[in-house]
Amino acid sequence: MQYPSSWLQGASLGESIACELRLQIIKGTIKVGEVLSENRIAADFGTSRSPVREAMRVLASEGLIRLERMGAVVLGLSLKDVEELYDVRYLIESFVQQRVSVMKLGTLIPSLKMIIDKMELAAKHKDVVDFSYLDLSFHESMVMEADHTRILHLWKSIRHIVMTVMLITTEEVFSKGEDKVQFVIDKHRLLVKGLESKDPKRIQEVVREYFSDSRNTLHHSFPSL
Image (cartoon, rainbow, N blue to C red; front, side):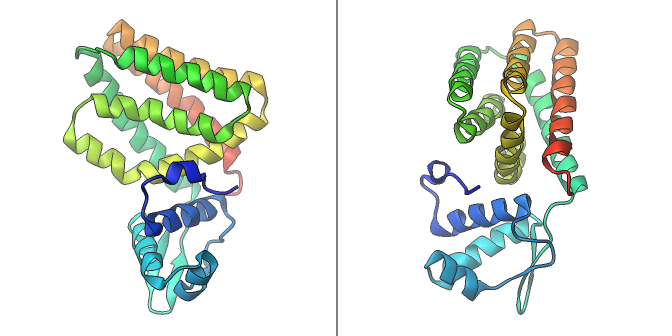
């Protein structure tokens, strides 16, 4: 699996390198404990060391590597790390959906329904990359709609890791067949119905159920962690 080029539009070379290395680290292609050499990575990507250093700083800030004199040691993601990532997502989305539900929803609901329709189309074409990106867009739309600067800052700090984990877990979902993919789509429809209800208890229940199932998929996607 390679990082989709369509996801890298507008990204600097350093960001692009970080994305590819992030996927390889989280996927396990680059092993925990491996030492990454700036020179080797620069040669692999056909670039100078400057964008590689930029990529290394990003990955270090995410806790995926530890910078040392002789290179960077890969720390990777443990199952605990990934579960904590989902805890943060759950806290963000619980807050965001409660906040959005009492606002004037305007075009949000139609926009979310349109994204789900596109997910249906991606599923029909067995397009894992497009499906996972639409999934991210669905959740990010609600974060943006909440119009909360600090929550948005928190979301952006985990966005790239979330996107990478989504790509991996979506691949696992698609491997389980059409019924599992449809189940995931239906879960998104339930989130929309929760928002439409404007019932705080109903919204909380739907979000909790959504992330409870997502954790099960997580364990199947990262069995070696």
